[in-house]
Length: 108
Image: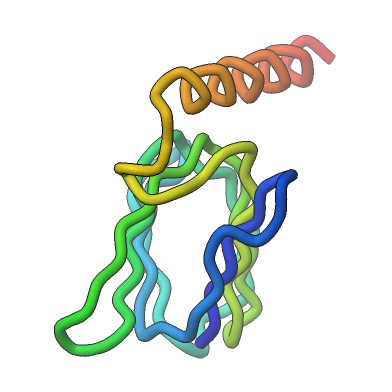
């Protein structure tokens, strides 16, 4: 299955994988190929992507949304990247923007 992570600045990550694990606002989840379609809201957390038997990539995401159709996983987020590439300031600014949007929609 293909996994793609997209920010407003472009595609951060795009590869084929065997498994994706992540944390939603309701708890942790994992996706295997051919899973039933899902759209969920992500928490600010790590996304672990298993590429092969012994190869795993871990990226940080500043919340966002995940969509899976069974053959592709797409994550849309304000900020994402490898742990060493993501500045803490940008990460927390993006997190604060996500929290403001959530508060806005909760008052409606």
